[in-house]
Image (cartoon, rainbow, N blue to C red; front, top):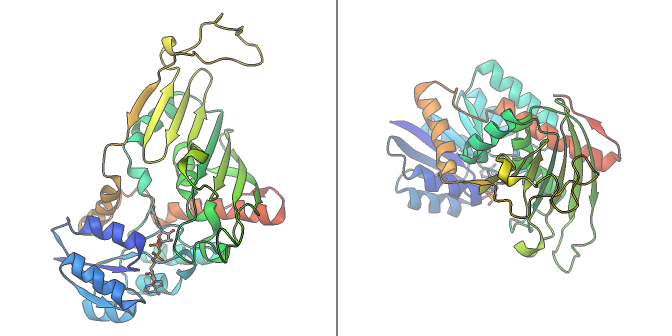
Length: 352
Ligand SMILES: NC(=O)c1ccc[n+]([C@@H]2O[C@H](COP(=O)([O-])OP(=O)(O)OC[C@H]3O[C@@H](n4cnc5c(N)ncnc54)[C@H](O)[C@@H]3O)[C@@H](O)[C@H]2O)c1
């Protein structure tokens, strides 16, 4: 049986482990964390394998056929280089790095070796994307207004921008990645950030942005805005979603939840004379009784994401992986360009 290993037995590592325990055709052979107790707990949950605190010792001893790298954003580099040197296909968590030159260097080495890779953009495997992509194919998208407003994750590295990349790079990257998946490549970004709402009293040692707003121009002409914040204390403070707007219909996309498309059916549009609406005036109105067509997420896309990588390693066919390192690299470059714009106060042209 092919052997699987995992490095980084924290929060997301546990999510992946909850999928692996149902994969009966591979051996869960090794778990590694700098905090050995975490690796030992994974061995217990897996019911197999050995715990390590040094990934090179783990590689020497168990010689894995594939590895999941689930370490914090600022810890990438040596682990990937060594994994590539040994020719081990790997799955790595987003954001794949906080330094674009480092990511480019890793990507070059992956390509030289022809290694199978995948990145933890599991939302790409959600069934709601079939409906979203079909809608976008048939309806020219003129603008997207997106937001992801959450709270501050409890892992200690998250609140330090140099360690996490900040909310946009660490979390909202899922939405930014989907914008690329749906619309193609971005051309230019301009981002501003604000802080001071989250005080030292609310969160100790916090130094990242409370909110950033990015304006994006895509190569296909679509413009988008993305608000990305971590100030929220509960869900009532904002409704996170992306609205994709076309000429006579729109789509509301709620990450990992549902898609609702309004205006596809003529009965879902306002009558020409409804309310104060005159066709072509300065402000069109919605049909007050619009219903939309709702498609709900109903598959375990997290398991499918992991299984797709495992199957690629087992069969040698990587064609079903929706986010290989080479593609995830572009999503990281996109979000890091937004960070650069926040720092410089200038628009940034995106070049991969
Ligand atoms: N795909 C997703 O939706 C998703 C969700 C949550 C987190 N993540 C990403 O996963 C990554 C990890 O996040 P987390 O919440 O699990 O963090 P975490 O802090 O809970 O876990 C990371 C673990 O890695 C270990 N570690 C660090 N360096 C190591 C090394 N050199 N060798 C062995 N172990 C090492 C740490 O000790 C820690 O236990 C982050 O990049 C985060 O953005 C992705």
